[in-house]
Image 1 (cartoon, one colour):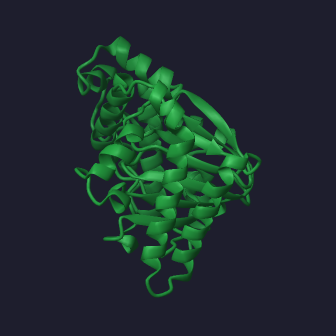
Image 2: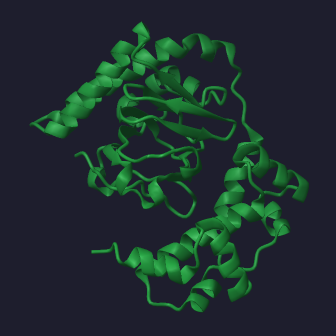
Length: 305
């Protein structure tokens, strides 16, 4: 069934299929960005394939190596395990709405060891040179792809008896159309492991799991068995920020959650999130959020019903 919840990301920056669709291997989700925390989708990835249809608004998707503009009527395909986000510094997401379907390849292939998977999924899933593809309604070749997305989404929305078969059928047609469109690029590209992104994911996961501890750049680099210089290069080239900036941003994000939902003092929250002192916490928080922790708590608790 269609959900309207905010994107749920675990401690490893991995977005999970919604539990409401557990067992279906897919989820249909309508994203109203006005309802999102800070009107953003933070950096994350997921194993599932994603197709997103822009129903309202114009905004910017961020990927490690580039940013792309998407507009009303566009459909965006995002490959498996690709880092992406929709960040507030690039967008005013007021009034923006996006319909999303994420699905496990086995929904269509029948299993990861099947001949269908080997022939029609692995070539594109393993093609790191195609992290995403935007399909515009102005392109004649995109019409069938967008149509099948809309039919799959509508079938799930109406939820008539046997709708799961209709969703599966429409997604199969959509996937085949995407493959036909991208086949020349797949043939030209040589699949290879992008070591830089894999290391970045390792280090981001390490930060997620250990942010409350005293961490140094050396600790972060060691988690991926690389040098401090290579660690800094990975963050800079892919996320346009230093490892410590990313760490402080994540700690601040966690502090925001505690300030709104908990009863701990500012000092206790500072210690829980790994900041060395209360004064450094306030300074860092102010730089990122534009207000003090107490001002943030007072402002946002008023909006909680």
